[in-house]
Image (cartoon, rainbow, N blue to C red; front, side, top):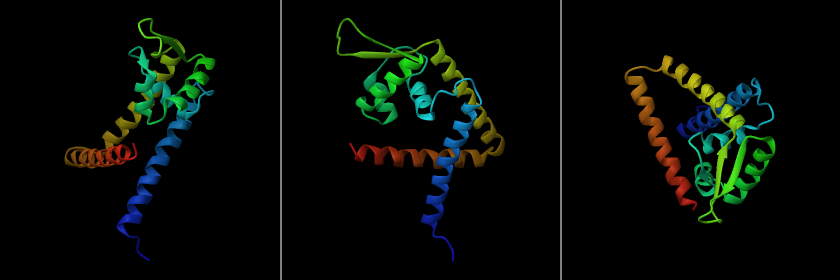
Length: 151
């Protein structure tokens, strides 16, 4: 029996998503940061190395609630990767930044992403790369609209 286009696309998207997560997780387990889950690593990535970000900004980027983020940040503070502070002008605003250890995780994770992109670029060049980029941009716009519809 032939698979329909929908079944094939669903299988490919699910496999791609799962493969990237599993490879990313295994790559990070081969580093010194074995005490972190992939979700915690993505939280560190969302905080970034640029400096202070608000809880609301980070939660928005991760597509989670501030309450869920608070739990994650508390764990990362205990592990020594993140620090939190309130600004004097408005004590309701909580700023989050990475510690030196958090910055090291961020950089290690960035290396994984660079290697992944470099390998993709080896296999897609010229017109193929343009087509891949256009397809991924359309998919991202679709998922962004879908995400917005749930808010």
